[in-house]
Image (cartoon, rainbow over all chains, first blue to last red; front, side, top):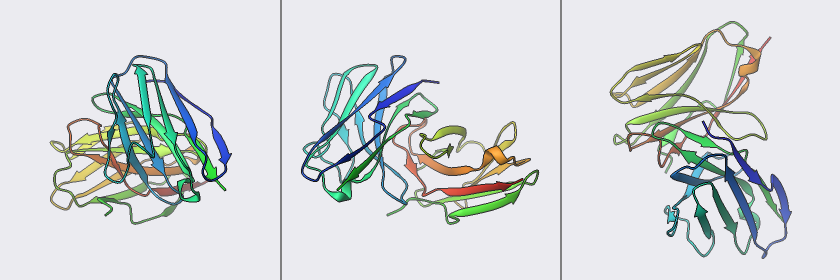
Length: 112
Length: 113
């Protein structure tokens, strides 16, 4: 398994601002993912963070709103841009092996 | 469109009894299924998985059953313990392995001492 940490653990932000969430893994991994869990909803995949190239976004998510960086095999960031109250969610990063995905503790974002 | 569904938002079980959590899916392309447990303020923790070539996988107190014809899977916990109280998510993937997971909405299990 992998140990995954996220910063910040929570934040309260004003609408129109941006927040960058960091994800750090204790070992090199090929696959890293970013998910969102809106209140009362299931986890939804935002994008796959690819090392050395642009992230691959799922339907309904765009790079301008959720830019992602993946500078190396142990670190990634997700930025939530121009936030609105609808962006209030838990954001989670995960890393994948062939048979499991391991999740970080999540970042709870509240937009006022 | 929710491709993975957990129709029971909550379940209460007495300690020592069996807990059965159910999950249904609609996409016949899914061939790999996982169960996660989530405590408040923590990320989901992987529990157990099953490939579509099997109909049962067991790991200690946890057993997952897969019925492909019914597009249904279930997680059995025997015996249930108070520490099992958490939200349980099932997830599915159409790639062999665990990339691009589709999650259900979760079932909150409460094990009563």
